[in-house]
Image 1 (cartoon, rainbow, N blue to C red):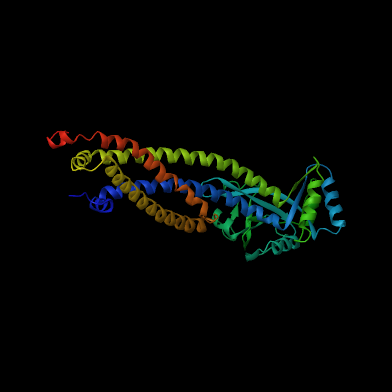
Image 2: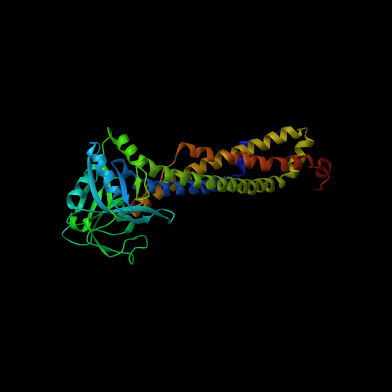
Length: 372
């Protein structure tokens, strides 16, 4: 007489196998959701930073040193174009309820058209007209995010993530992969601003030289923002957040491993008599132990496969919801697969040792005599 193989035993106990596999898959899904939502938040930051692939910003804090610096670089023939603008900071909602930055520029009609062309943004609806006050041009994604359409008005009172004073009418919606907004403004109004902001446009051939010149001229009277400095800030934030995330993930894996190990132990405790009978039939502790390890392994693999299906469904559902909510697309990276590896390890680890003792203590004689 021989015991059922691991797979046959699990197939004959489908309810128990399914419940444990489902617990494993849900545990893995929780870790993945945590990671995916954090990445989605950071991707929202990148959508704003992508504007700096075509120009760098010089923001005057005091005096006219910023203007002198920009003029100096332009006189050297390094810049394609300089746009004098007023820069404001707003935001929009990300998937987990935090906000991602939305830069808003006051510009003339021609400057908006030039900037949109350089950023590969195409006006889909509406028009650009600086003669009409309080107009706002935004991306399709931001429009969906804020649930506004052409002709709607927006302000701090109507949108908790809108940070600009005053009320504005949506007069233009563009399509493109960069989140930035424009307020068409007459040049005279821009010139009246004391601390001016400048966008210094470049091409690939002079990009490095321009950014090097900007960053080498440090001053307390202005700030310089390039794509590299902005990305470094994002990556520094993400790096710090990743450390915290990894600690949280490790704790989750440990806790879930202990819980699932306890569930496994409880299930195998109910089979204590079975182990005693197998010992009476001549099976060694090692033979029984290998059988159990195989069962745990197969159950864990089934749980991982369930988790993969659930993750795919979650990503698809979130991307559908994210599209209509104007949020960045959710994406899975190859490195995410390494998040799965600890689960089989910890589940097995927290199951093995108590089960070994359980097998050793299975009293063959007591079982044969009808005891426990």
